[in-house]
Image (cartoon, rainbow, N blue to C red; front, side, top):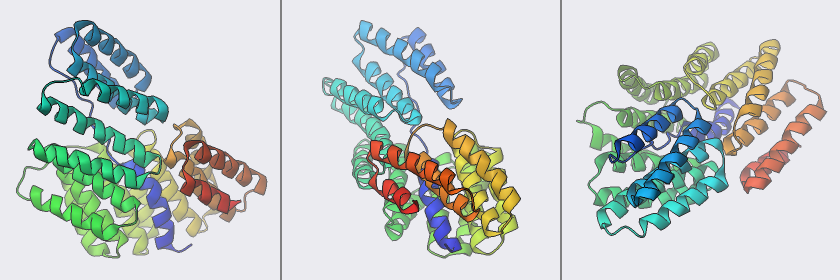
Length: 360
């Protein structure tokens, strides 16, 4: 597998993992409940998801008792967002359906539109995580339309960026670049924000995949400067990974290893997977067997701790391919692939299931 093909395979994993989750939002009503939701948002940002769920369930119960259906819908949407992070797809979908049912009873058309757009953001995340890129694209198009009607520039821009992710997942890089260029032009004279940095990240990513490495590096470094100024650690890590990919494609493996490690150092949870898989790929290509074997063992341990989703399963397939190159025992490789096949089948992710079957 050549360098570009390796990166495109790893890019499928990186793409989904790098998508920013919609923000947890809350309503400015009863102060005691608002405090509970703010604490839940803080726990969510710290990856303390189970504790956040308990607080949100308490808030939802209190909103229902007060008859505050708008705040109840927002809290349920936030609950779905956390379930999505945990890979609890059935619960996430159920929560979103419940929120949509509540929204249908709201009289204000503006409030309906605002809440539905936020729900669609999360629904698109779930669909893409389950390998349903076309569905995610349509969902985010609907969210974009609603945000445009509301004259919500921030929401509109974020939804456009989400569309670009879906287009990349579908392999439609020229359309993705066109979408992102439109976003960049809208943000040209706006203050530096996380959305602006992420737009530049995605433009650089697409340019790299289309062979425009110098132009890509320039755009990525512009985004990095903004992200470091804010600072936005997740975006910084994403940009470092893409700069690492650029370095690899320019035959600078040592530079790539350093950039990947920098990204890992400021990442947490499932975000670490991208950097470690990328490092493993470089080490294998350099025939650094001892270092590659250590990296592979760490990845296997990490995968066992991550929630069940498309990226986790694809990570197993990628790990198995590298273990094959490291001449690992066939029985171990088969065990990893069989696990990936079962999980992909359970989630209905046929493409990932096919990738795993091809490795057996």
